[in-house]
Structures are given as structure tokens and as C-alpha cells.
Length: 255
Image (cartoon, rainbow, N blue to C red):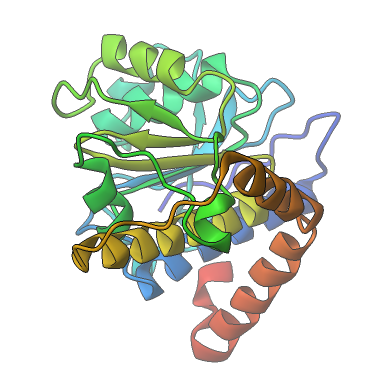
């Protein structure tokens, strides 16, 4: 178990940093509940410093369903000795999350998983999320698409390429790989990932009928996407409700 870091910044108090640990641990547990996880792979991280370079992340090869707030690693993307630590993170996690936190300040919370429906869409020649209903329209013209998968992301060059691929976007369909979502907070990133996987589920089911898709016009799709942005506060309520469900089942994530 990693030592809980009590780093203080001009932005967070010690209690606020602990709450960030609790929220990120909850996201792992909820991802397992929703079957978004994959064995002992995939990673979530959360920046705790103003510049985003210091962050929390899951320890190597720990199942999402067992992660606790106190288990989370405290990492610094500027520390060249990170992978020499006895509790070093998974190489692919360091490659992706270390580079994103180092280079993209807007990527405060980074959720990267291989959920069934989003991953299925990522394998298509055209992995764009077509706006065919309210949920899919949430992502209209708001997703980066990476079609240059080159194998397991475990070297610095690949991490830097993914930084360029994501750019200023907050969601990325990682072709032949999975999906990555970033947000200002765990609640916002979790809610976005939830709806992205739901959107991809709808799209997969629609494709499976073999019938032509009834794609919304660009005008209506954009109007719907903007409408979602007005409901942003609901992401916090959604996450709080999901944590209450966790509390009823197994509150150990907060330990």
C-alpha cells in the first residue's frame, strides 16, 4: 500500500486532497461495477497540483474493484526516476498519463478504459460517434479520433504522440484500442465516460440491425450538444448518487 502523500498546494488543503483520493477510488469501483474494466489493466489518474504535473494514479496490476483511496500512487510527471521506484506504475500507464499530465493542463482527470461498446466503435474504419439520438449527439464534433495505433503504449514517443492526438479535446476515440476521457474533476470525467459508453452502445445496436442510420442534421446535432453543456451541473449529482450506491454496498473504497 502506498503512503498517503500530504502535499499541500495553494489550491488544495490536506482534506481536499484526501477527498480527491476518495473520488478517484470511487471511480475505479464504479467502473468495475459497470464492467468497463479489463482484467488488471487500464488506468485512471487525477492531477493534484496547479500545473497538473503531480497526480494520483492506480498502482500496478491492482483490480479496479479492490482499489482504496489510500492505495493510489502519488506521481510527478517531471520525475525521471518514477519507473525505478519499487512501486513503479505500469509502463503503459506512465507513458499515457505521465505525458498527458505533463503537457495538457486541461487534462486534470484522465480516464482510460477499454469498455465493450466504445472499444467496438474504435475498431471501425470510421469510429466517429454518429449523432443518431440525444446521447450520441452529446459528442457531435467534440471527439478527437486517433487512427494511428502502433501497439501497446509503453514508450515515451507514443505518449507524446497521444498528447498531440488529443490536443485541446476532452474525449478521444483511440482507434483499435479504446477510449480516453479527460475532465476538470472526477465527477465530470466519470459522467462523460458514462454517456460516451451509452452512446456507443446505442450506435452498436443501431449498426447491428443492418438498416440505414437516421443521422441527425448538423444543425440539430449541434443544438443538442450545446443543450448538454447547460446540464453540466448534473454530472456532480450523478457522481454523488453513484457514490451513495457504493456506500450502501461497500464503503471500503474511501479507506
